[in-house]
Image (cartoon, rainbow, N blue to C red; front, side):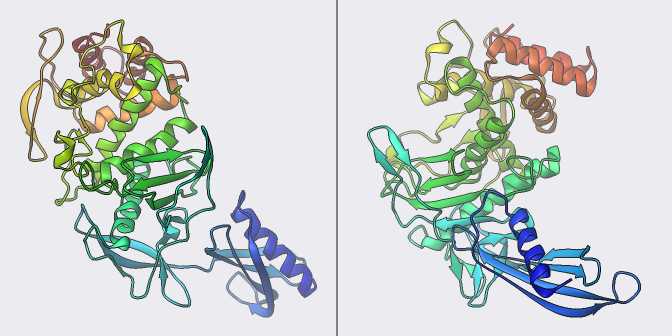
Length: 420
């Protein structure tokens, strides 16, 4: 096997490892070696292939090829993760896996599918009327010593720490709990854009770029929207898109939003971060005094936000999806925690039922397992609230047996919010 052919093989393997990416400045440098690690000693080409992805991030792979037969012996990534830490805005000092470069470190995690965080530079996407074109991926955030951020909102790296940490915890929740590696389940990471726009009071997931975008907030109603539950919420829209594909309108749209609230909450609990303990409020960390409420949404009693529905009726389908989600959020809280007053994560909760019944919770873990199976196996794009009841009952029967305690609890929780 000639050296140019070995180089071509390595370059193709690097491209295959980054399908869908445009690789620039690709080089492949073969070196003839004696391989004694894979059986009897033999001549082999060790080829180091390297390139930059469309965001300018380095990618690299080493390929070992039999010099006589051309067969691939082994291949491995050359960019190794290194452990750093970051001072976040909402979660204290958190661990980070990063990538070492010639000049320092990148906020890119090779252990979680090359998930990375970039600084959007306060720019927005390019929009004309209602049509928006996504800008090129934001440049990855870098650091000299692998100790990121100061913990202050004014520090640009601090907000990046929260975004990366939220992505990491969301990845870990889905992998640890449901065996799902990555949002699409393919082991590939997404990326984050922080500092989007000026005083932008929102965060969103976009399937087109397979990315999360975070605004800094206006400082009066909201601060940077990079809390754990917001990250888990928005990234779960990607999971929903890759599974049931719940249409984003009517009752299916409410279920789409509720799915993100449910798993965003479970991500927060999974993190077990004492600086941001789990609770059933959404966005309590990001709201400021000018917002006028203690959180964006309240899952124990959704109507506390002034707009969301606690109970199902015929008008729910006409609500904004962020408000029609209240019915499923209320169901989820009741299924996990039960009805009545209690303290969860140091926060007071109180969840009355719509029919005056008493519901006994079965725990957050079983809620997550049931809802995930319903989402990935039994729901479709047009599932409405009646269909969600059927899907979760089927999921509970699949997992725990029809007629068992969990199956009965699902039925009771749906009846308690008027879906029966």
